[in-house]
Amino acid sequence: MSYQRFPVPERLQGVVEHVWMVESAPLPEVRREILIPNGRPGLAIALADPGTRHDPVTGAEWVNSGSVFGVMTRPHVLGQIGTSSYVGVEFTPWGLAAFGLPALVDSVRELSEWAGAEAVAGLLGELRAVPFGAARAERLAGFLAARLTGVDVPQVVVEAVRAIDELRGRVAVAEVVRRCGTSYSTLYRLFRRSVGIGPKQYAEIIRYYEFVGGLLGGPADAAATLAALHGYYDQAHAARDFKKYTGVSATTFLAVQNGIAALMHERSVQDE
Image 1: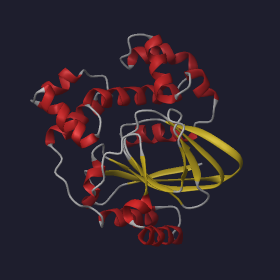
Image 2 (image 1 turned 60 degrees about the vertical axis):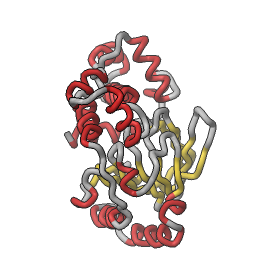
Image 3 (image 1 turned 90 degrees about the vertical axis):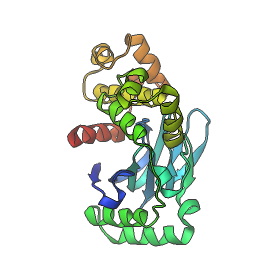
Image 4 (image 1 turned 180 degrees about the horizontal axis):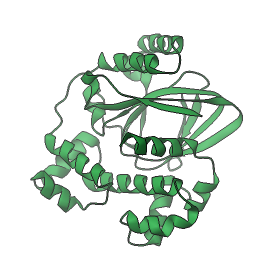
């Protein structure tokens, strides 16, 4: 499986974090992987055989052909068969608003519903006409740059996200409020309006995401140590959150194929 990230042009900085691409050899049978919440909205476009995306909480399932999705507070399961080739972006936590989109927390909007069927068809043609690599990333970035509507994100939200990310979610909201020099009510109101969830829930998602990254990078018996390092009260607390954000136990998660999760975490470490 090939996975790569590409930087975005200056015009998109602050609303899009990067463009990504993933390709794999044809799959003869359905492969399922758990997509873990990471506090970011995203966009994904299938350039070959589209897979499926399943919400285990609501039971909803849709074809993963081309869509925009908001911050997830629970896992989704990706299913893929045939030739896998996707390109997409990861927005900043508040990035959807810059394109006139609502927060879409735990929900998905078809790309054609947002940008129009004709524009999306043209984009697909352009993306398929160039190979995996920077030229394809530039095409998608240009498509998005043309659709910026502009939005002023409160600086306190940017500072709060930065503080939570830098501390890997291991920070109390009271400390974030202190760092930002504001009140809890103001931070909560602005954060929820811009991101779609509150700062406490965002910190929980980031802390858990970092916990899973450590688990993917080490042996299964490292779970207790990782729990302590990532601010959990004990291993039982970590296990409850693991089930909450993946839908399965840590043992089950490590037993299944989670190439996407591993690649995302590996690349996140390299990007630091």
